[in-house]
Length: 419
Image 1: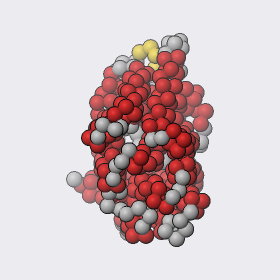
Image 2: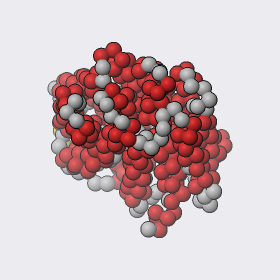
Image 3: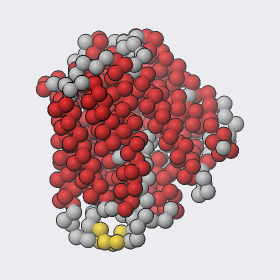
Image 4: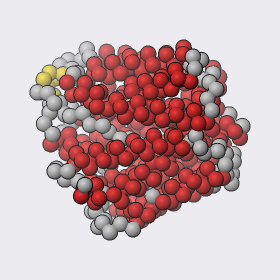
C-alpha cells in the first residue's frame, strides 16, 4: 500500500492521459464520418498520430536532459491539449492530420517522462509491483477510453473539450508532486538493425502486431459503423478488443515461458487468421457475434508484441536490452504509421471486411516467415521471462531490463533455431 501511495501521482497521470489519448482516435474516426471525410482521409489521421508518436519517442529523452522531467511533461501535454482543442476550429482532413501529429507527440513524450520517473522509483525489491500497478492502470484506462466513445458526440466541441480537459488534468499530479525529479538518463541509441540481428522473426512479428493493433484502433470505428453499430455499441466493440488483450496476457505468457516462442507466435497467427475469417463471415450474424469476435481478436493479436519482444531478448545481453527495446518500438511505429491509411483505403474500395482481410494477410505472411525461420540452424540461448510489454515509449526497456535479467529463467538453457 505504501508503494502504491508513493506512485499515486504518476499513476493518476497515466490514468488521465490514457483516457484522453485513448479516446481521440475513435472519436476522430466517427467525427470524420460525420463531417464527410473519405475513409482514406480518416485512415491518414491514424497514420499521422503514429508519425507524431515516433518523433516524440525520439525527442522526449533529449528534451528531458535540457529542461527536466516536469517541464517536458508539461510541454508535451500542452501540445496534446492544443491538438484536441483545435479540432472543432478547423474541420478539414489536412488540419486534423497536423493536429493528430501533436496528439501523437503528446502520448510519446508524456509516457517517456512517466516511465523514466517510474524507473527511478523502482528497485529490485519492488520492480514487479511497480510494473504490475502501471500495467493495470494503463489497461483499465484504455478500456475506459473506448467506453467513453459511447457518450461523446462526434464532431462536437464539447467532446473534444472533455478530452482536452483530461489531458490538462494529467498535468496536476506530476507538476504538483513533491517527489524529487530523477536523474535524466541518456537517450537510447536508435539502432533498428539490432532487432533484425537479434531475431528477424521478432522484428517481423512486431510489424504485424502494429498492423493489427493500429488498424483496429484507428479504423475499427469505421468498420463498426459500416456493419450497423451505434456509437455506444462501437465503444463496447473497441473495449472488447482491449479486454481480450488484457485477459490473454497471463495464459499466453505461461505458454511463451514453457514452449518454443516461435511455436507460440505460429499459434497466435493461426488463431488471428481464424478470428479475422470468423469476423468476415459472421459480421452480419448480430451484435453479439461482432463483440465476441472483437474479444477473440484481442486475445489472438494483443500478445504478439510481447511474445516477439521476449523472443528477441532471449538473444540479447543485458547491456543491449534498452537499445533492443527501442529498436522493436521503431519497427512497431513503422508498421503503425502505414497500417491505418492502407486499411481505410481498402475499406473504401472493397467494404468493411477488407480491414480483417488485410490483418489476416499480414498474419499469414508472419506464419510463413515463422515456419521458414524454424529451418535455421540451432544455437544455444538462455530463455528470458515473458514480460507484458506496453508500446508506450522508447524508454520502456529501462523499466523491463532488470525484470528480464533478475528473474530466474522459466526453463533451462536449450538449443534454439532462431535467429
